[in-house]
Length: 173
Image (cartoon, rainbow, N blue to C red; front, side, top):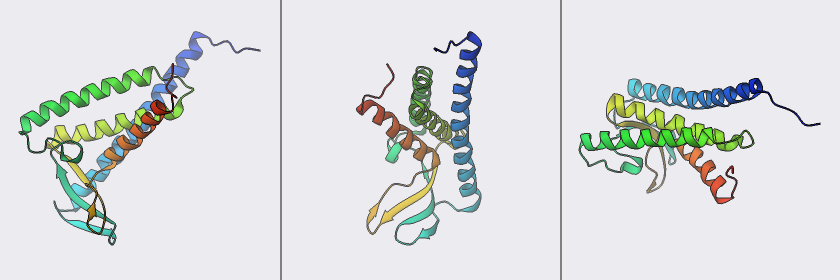
């Protein structure tokens, strides 16, 4: 027997899809902003707390540029304009992809929500501070990974899920 969905059922299904988006993105934004607030209030700029010696520190740094310091040496006006534009465009693309992601692709939808939460978390920093607060710092001997934050982590995980769907042809038709 086939299940017939009424308009009311589809509306409820559509609403729950966007409730999940708001919950996932909202939790990421909340965790990102709370951890950054803790860093701003409790750790002086360029100071560190060693968590795992020789591997992981909490280090308060600021990134005026994009990923890996991209455009960090450009003027603040150029950076602000470019990052506001790129962030807004990315958020529009995320909403477009999310809208077109069926319920049969929950991991893709979660990945898109993670990207959204991370993008908004870093955008809040750019609007509020003119730069992004980073604090998670991993290293082994002389090999150092640039410091990052919760928003960066969410974007990375979300993009990994998105790329996985593209590479393995799991994108919705």
